[in-house]
Image (cartoon, rainbow, N blue to C red; front, top):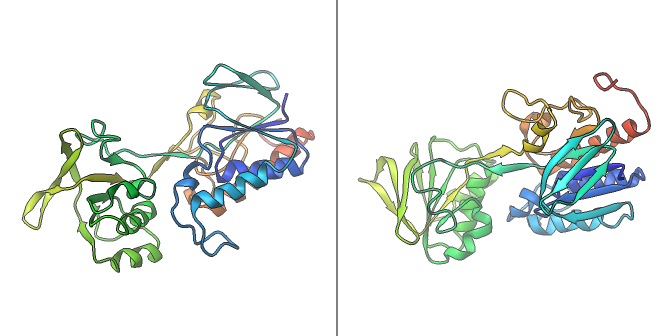
Amino acid sequence: MFDVIIIGVGAAGYTTAIYTARYKLSTLLIGAEEGGMGATAAEVGNWPGEIDITGPDLMDKFKNHANSFEEVTQKIARVTAVEKTSDTFKVTVQSGEVFEGKSVILATGSVKRHLGVKGEEEFSGKGVTYCATCDAFFYRNKVVAVIGGGDSAVEGAAIAAQVASKVYLIHRRNEFRAEPYWVDKVKSKENIVFVLENSIKEIYGEQKVTGLTLEKPFEGSDTLTVDGVFIEVGALPSTELALQLGAKLDDRGFLQVDAGMRTNVKGLLAAGDLTSASNHFAQFTTAAGEGAIAANSVFGYLQGEKHEGWM
């Protein structure tokens, strides 16, 4: 029986574990993908104290810090079910193993959004990928397209431009939502071609991707010949486990939490990209901050503090 089970091993999960350990709570830290979305960041320039560090390196520091406490037990496994009994939670992983805890903190983050266009699923892993910073290396001296206008898309285009011969950056608007830092970077790259106020309607090929079809013609043609397509159009909160427990979502589909990161389910808290907190601003700093707050709240809960809605 653990005091708290933290589901998710990214920025929010690791930070939460650091704080629960400092509160001397026996903690199970469990998840399938170490580092979470944070491990896909090629460059992190806004984590305080680290002027220049990669996502994987930063997540390694988080991991090592969390696992330095004897109160923390980490297990790499995919959680398939969470069940609430009268006063405890049962967490089941893919192998069938079951763990029990007095409380649960969800830090499951988000999953990449798909476009839903023809050929996308067919060529997934065959030229279609959802992480430009992860997979750009495989497209050295090739032509690729990056779809999207947010931070992940614009950062991904900048990273891909370092190895690819040409990068088409396709965005349905004329302006980017990404940080000006990344926008300035892509504008300085001579091998990035902007395809703005446009979108794709099909990805095609044979054994692998060979091209895509645009909604509107670009430079006289509605097709582009490419070797790879990086789809970076945002992410969806991973709320499946929360819904199993009857937790409420907000009107955008994020897990509804209060200022203490508590859900409507007694003993269930959350932190990171899946929550409604921080105005849906998905950053390392916000994930870490929410994790610290969740740990503080769960400590109070386990100490017998009463809270409105959890009476």
